[in-house]
Image (cartoon, rainbow over all chains, first blue to last red; front, side, top):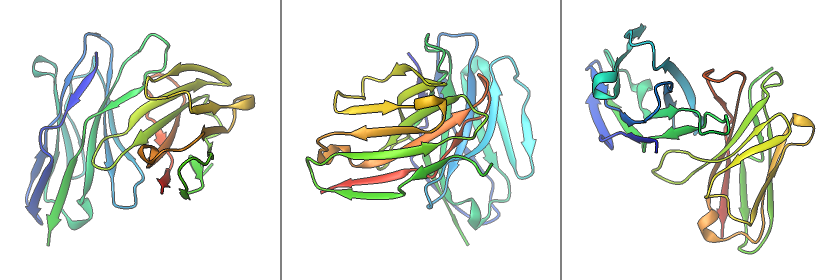
Length: 117
Length: 113
């Protein structure tokens, strides 16, 4: 069974602080994909990153960085120098073959990030 | 192509009525998904199409729910005899190959009164 845990329900930071959003996943498969999505108040899910299970390289994109550690089944997301526009709900998601080839996404419950000016 | 389109954006209906939502995926994406998101939760998988074939359905998809994707292009999700518990955001997503990023639409917010 797939499971994604985002233990932090809500986080508040002051603008320009760094913040890390945690994600822990469970899977029995060796091939899987991990995602992060941002959901601003408008409601649309915005794709941030995809990582496959064979690629443990950390990634940096501007102020965003991701730390993937298979040994601890974690895929954490760090925002450096946070800005008010980063305020949103962030979802971590896992995708693996369900048997029918869907590679459906299993989402965590999300972490609501509030960046205070 | 401007992405995944969903219509309507909002729907208010009385309990017991039927409702239908439409999703237009990215044209070159042959895989299409429906998800449901309730307040404070992450989206939950409902069903999956590859081209016109519905290949997987979640246990969440009760008999009152039906989805179609005629001709492998747009998809519709119908809920019959709506209940208050059906109130949620219904999201559509499409993608090309396994492991590709999923592109989500803006969703249809259903309120059953």
